[in-house]
Amino acid sequence: MNHELVLVVDFGGQYNQLIARRVRENDVYCEIIPYTAGVEAIKAKNPKGIIFTGGPNSAYLPDSPQISADIFDLDIPILGICYGMQFIAHTLGGEVKRGENNQKEYGKTKINYGESTLFDGLTTNSVWMSHTDYVANAPEGFEIVSYTDVCPVAAFQKVDKKIYGVQFHPEVEHSQEGYKIIKNFLYNVCKVSGDWTTTSFIDDKIKELKEKIGDKKALCALSGGVDSSVAAVLIHRAIGDNLTCIFVDHGLLRKNEGDDVERIFREKFDMNLIRVNAEDRFLGKLKGVTEPEQKRKIIGEEFIRVFEEESQKLGRMDFLVQGTIYPDVIESGLGDSATIKSHHNVGGLPEDVDFQEIIEPLRLLFKDEVRQIGLELGIEENLIFRHPFPGPGLGIRVIGEVTKEKCDILREADAVYMDELRNAGLYREIWQAFATLPDVMTVGVMGDERTYAHLVGIRAVTSSDGMTSDWYNMPYDVLERISNRIINEVDGVNRVVYDITSKPPGTIEWE
Image 1 (cartoon, rainbow, N blue to C red):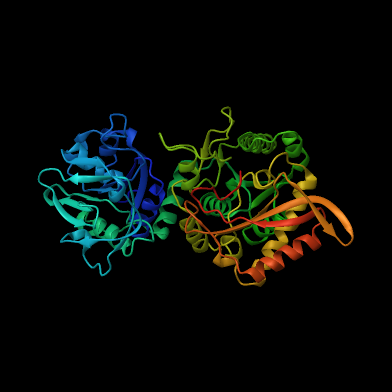
Image 2 (cartoon, rainbow, N blue to C red):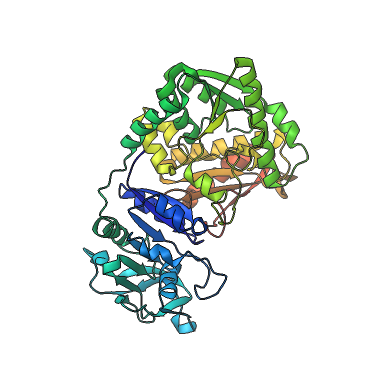
């Protein structure tokens, strides 16, 4: 792929993936790169523009994230956001100070916009601030083009050097018309043409896969989720019968999911599909294990071992295909970014994988892009808009030790939950919903008898990509029906609770 590129330089902020998403929404290809990559690596990628992200550090401290000032001499447009702006100011001779109580800004803030190409077409003046430090004085030669009641430099620019900075976060939805600021930077400053579309991605990727794989054989790790399904159909489009899909039923899937996967890919897409029923094997490996990262690693390693064994039965398989997507890669650690959790198809792979190469055709895509590509490839909507499901499956939704009994309870509870969401017309409104089984037993009363049974947690969140999310404000009558049905229909459960935690501070999954 030879598309125009904008680089997001990661300084550790919580909205970094969201910035990249906003760039892609404007039909511009974008990648995130850690600040530690350095100027030469950035220059080698020949980007049309660079965006410095926010971050939790103070630009004036010696151990704060930094990149060489040589980056300002590359004649590449730069937009600094929050910490990114403060880094520009501090590096180029401005003054960054720690705000006193009356100079800190968090949340929605009224802003005064001046003259700048960044602000072309804006009709509102409410933005989202999240900062303690602030730019007290802009560097020499910089023009202050925005301020608030307490922030003297809310945006600045040096037009001849194409360097811009904003103290607020235009990438979040709370900043009214923030998307216009990003679009103005891309099209008015970086002068992009906007050549990144899902259709161009499909054509480019199929061509690339044909050249890479040729007449060799590929084995696809098919889970039946959105990501692996789209990866499988994309590869199949490129190499046809040289692809064999192995679907491992590890006993950690949702109710009836194994049969559905087998039906769809055998009948609709006529793929070479092998179903491996490995429930006993996985549950045996997980026996006695309670630590979530260890569970993820075990499940990831067993996946690979199963593929190796099946590969040997089939003869030489040169490539292993996985449905890894960009948030998986980033959340598993991008450079110096903190690892939130490892993903079984990124961080949990054993080092002695017996394949020539692992191919991850969706590795640089966000979830909504994957869905759009899936629709263009002809995958049915029911599968494409299925809620995200983690690779380790119920292995991380059963908190603590994983057993068949617990998985069966959780499967039934989750099926009731999804049924009620569909009945209420809420399933497509929610980004992700699921039931979880904490390692908690509670006292209850059913009829005239005292019970001591499992607690089921239910969760529903809204999001555009899973990187940040809000808990879904579920109607009480729907919650009541879900709770009543789970308790009445699922043996071993006597209590249901609803999770009202957003991300951040929580993750979407409980483990």
